[in-house]
Amino acid sequence: MQEKSLAELADYVGGRVFGDANVMIKSASTLGRAEKGDISFLTNRKYAKQLRTTRASAVIAGKETTSTTVPLLIAEDPYYAFMQVMVLLHGHHKHKKVGISPHTSIADTAKIGADCHIHDFVTIADDAKIGDGCIIYPCVYVGQNVEIGNDTIIYPNSTIYDGCKIGNRVIINANASIGEDGFGYASHGGLHHKIPQIGTVIIEDDVEIGALCGIERGTLGDTVIGQGSKLGDLIAIGHGTKIGAHSLLVAQVGIAGSTTIGHHCIIGGQTGIVGHISVGNNVTIAAKSGVINNVPDDKVVLGAPAIEASQGRRAYGMIQNLPEMRQNIRILQSQIQRLALPSESDHEEKAEQ
Image (tube, rainbow, N blue to C red; front, top):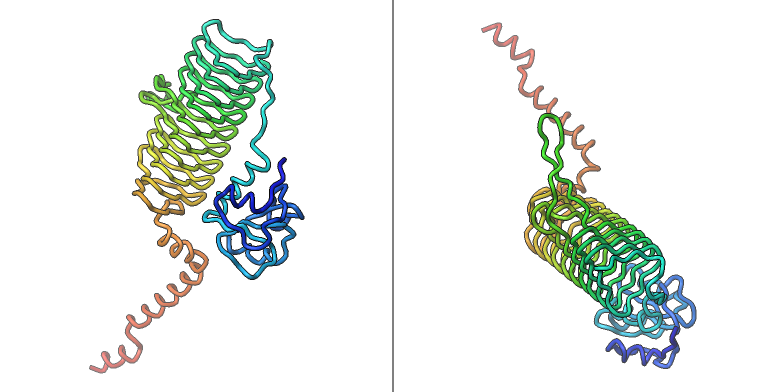
């Protein structure tokens, strides 16, 4: 862990200091938990009042404020600046260099790049190719003809099925399954007959796959996870789905087969997306949504079925009023019926005539 002055941190992230530039920073924390020597950040206005009470030695913010005596590091993008400071002060997780364990099973025809570290009980099948600088943790299975790029990290108990292609600097977290058969069956005569899945999975550079994810190989074409995309835990990607570059999928998302997701999409947790539809670029889907139709570029949708956010907020906001509205409708219906029925005096008048 390094210790830096606030001036040094500001210079590192391309920001400027408002207050004491000589204060020393050795760690990072939240506004509420920070102590002396810590730097924190403010990106959400609802936490602004904590600037008055935080014990942090400095805070990264987007603009100056007189509502605090804490020195500020002013940055154009405070959260990105905080990330840079975190990396500088703490660095990323360091992986133990173990070389190639004698307890691995590596096929004679497999090719292992330079400076790889392969832990106990890893199995690497025939004709697999592992790039330089890869870290493969215990009990990982790498199937036949798998190709893995440079500097990729695969955590314990993950499985890479035959023929999958993994790019450079990919992170695959524990217990992920890459390239399992797609959920493809032909139902006939009351039975479900398995369809061979002859496609594969392609994971492009700089992708991160969360723990316990299942990514199915395509039936005919490939399942593709685009460059720089990040998948949270417990995500299921159906066969033949294509996810564009730099998209974020939060935990427990489920995407059925043959769906196309554009680039820079954000998909909230527990969202379900049906198969054979297209979601455009720069789309945001709120958590627990159910997407059953195509979504154009640049839309924000929510709900089940998912609709545009502006419309959805109004529609779902009315739900709590539905019982009262139902009662009012019944009252109105009763009043209308009474107005439509002839009165007793009308009957008497007609009888005299």
